[in-house]
Length: 312
View 1 (cartoon, rainbow, N blue to C red):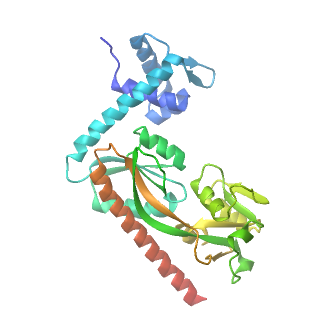
View 2: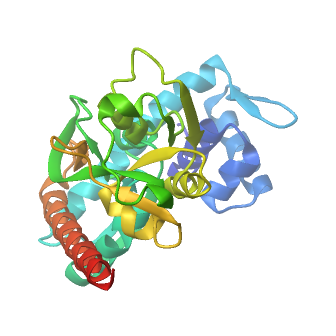
View 3: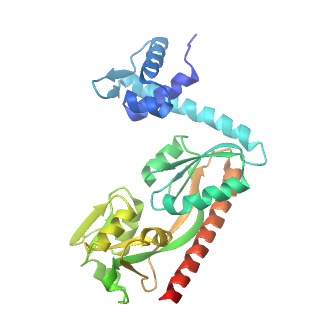
């Protein structure tokens, strides 16, 4: 009879994802020697070597790769069993693993968490912030319950629910205050600052400027919207940022913010989850809370903008 514990499966899954004992142990909140011992016991139980152990990293053997695939399926089924039990209750309770892209999380997350805590006090919220491809992978592997991303994601196995739309605004040095926004074609001749590869917002900005097939003359990358705005304030170039980020990212930077003429560049933000998730009904309720949170945030930003306009 095979004696492999669920705990060992989770430890091995973490090790397969991180390919590093130290990082996997940290993710599992155990010591590295304890993790190593559990993996060795799992290898003994299975009668095969799962890992090629190197000085700094580990690699899965052919046997280990196949076991890792099957372990992910097992863990997904176990998690869905827990989700099924939670779905039988009227209110969502227990752990909610929610992902957000970096161009949303810092601005929307505080309001969402506050509203969710009040409307669903039994939820234990775990947040994961990373780029869309990683969120979708973790969602489909069962490591997330839902994710808030820019739509569409066009993944057949996922349900997409649109939440709200927001425009992109142009951020320029403060000396440009009051001047008209350039056309999308004119942006092609400017030093345009964008997020680095992997961020969907980068692709959306490039699409507005029609830059996919012909690269701009000068294109500089950054890892965050905050860095982009600070680079603009230093006179390095111009950038686009989503409307919800304006209040936070420009409050301490001497920059000017301008709307484009219609049709303005924009994106649709939505929630996605697995079509097989037993929590679909509860996640739809969560999406309504996120919608209300976005409306609250938009109203607060509108009031703040009106106040600044009156002062100037």
